[in-house]
Amino acid sequence: MTKPSTHFTKVLISGFLSIGVTCYTANSLYAQSPSASASSGTETAKIEKRYQNEVKSITKKPAVKKAFQTIVNLEPQTRQDHITLTEIPAPPFKEEARAKKYAEMLKEAGADSAWIDEVGNAIARRKGRSGKKTVVLEAHLDTVFPEGTDVTVKQHGDTLFAPGVADDTRGLAMVLTVLRALEQNNIETEADVLFIGTVGEEGLGDLRGVKHLFSENGPDIDSYIAIDGGGLDRITHAGLGSHRYRITYKGPGGHSWGSFGLANPHSALGKAIYYFTTEADKFTSEGPRTSYNVGIVGGGTSINAIPFESWMEVDMRSISPERLNGIDQLLQAAVQKALKEENLTKRRGADLEVEVKLVGDRPSGELPVTTPLVQRTMAAIKYFNVEPKSSTGSTNSNTPIAKGVPAVTIGGGGTGSGAHSLDEWWLNEDGHLAIQRALLVLLTEANAAN
Image 1 (cartoon, rainbow, N blue to C red):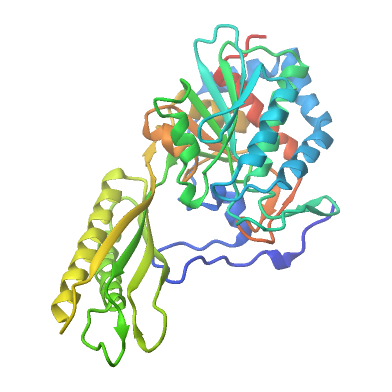
Image 2 (image 1 turned 180 degrees about the vertical axis):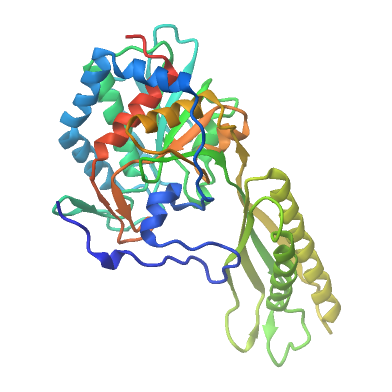
């Protein structure tokens, strides 16, 4: 088995001005954090005996035993699905080609029906005996890489190298294999199961795919299981909410000598950053963990020109909706204070104006560890002699959790690193165990009928 070279384990630091944000090594980003998103520390939780017994009972069923072996037998097919999907570009807001292919693959794998919804999610339904409940098994279609990125998969031994190969194309391949294992062993469930590839999970996609699923135009969903990130032990059942803003100060601009005295957007932006980070530092020193980051700044045309605009993009996160709203209010106050002060300093010309645009709004929330889906997931992980670790993350599960719908995010197994980088890789180290675990979670939640 070929091991990837160690030069891929390096520190990833995003953003030009990063304040109060934890940096992980590239390897830990994949192993611990869903979709390379921020994740809090993990902890173990007690598993109730009844859920462990439920898992053991299901694994004793002959059809389930055969399905576990089918997953092993399907490893070459899973690998080919993985490569095929990785090599179909899915840049932000341009996931159409991958979605179309994925819907076709879901139908070919045995789904009763497959379609693409209004926002581009690829969805397939496998009908249950009663259909009184609907359970989702999902991974996201989109990657962070812009159009034109070379996504050709390069293979070195057993290791796959390509942008997006782990996050989250591995998850898409897993969903297909779970469906195939059900079909090939004629396993029925009481609940309907939706197998989904969602759009817009990454960055400014702002969870638009899953938000649509839970809108008034989406299907009725009772439980949600997402596959994202790595590892076999992690279970994310707390959604890390975030607010993201693009803030732009605008003015007339002019020559640095001839128009001296005009209000300067850069000066206003600098003041806003100072006022915000000063207050945010105090705010985040206590209470539920909350973070803030000024990630990108821009504007200006020349060293001898007063800029006509200056902008920044700001990210704030917290598991607590109240704390998230609190730090948001600090940002708004700092922006307006800076605007007022800069306008008071001008000696000529028009006042500056500021545009505050919300570009990301991920809801937060947390499911108790006593929630049946959380307990079943932990019991399924424990079945493979692995200690489950509960964690907080920013994934597609955020939306259902915030709406009170049971949801978890589990990892894709194997080993990987370099998420969100051109050097991304994934190695199939006992990856079949993660697929078997996903099948087991699904069968317990959807009530295996045979």
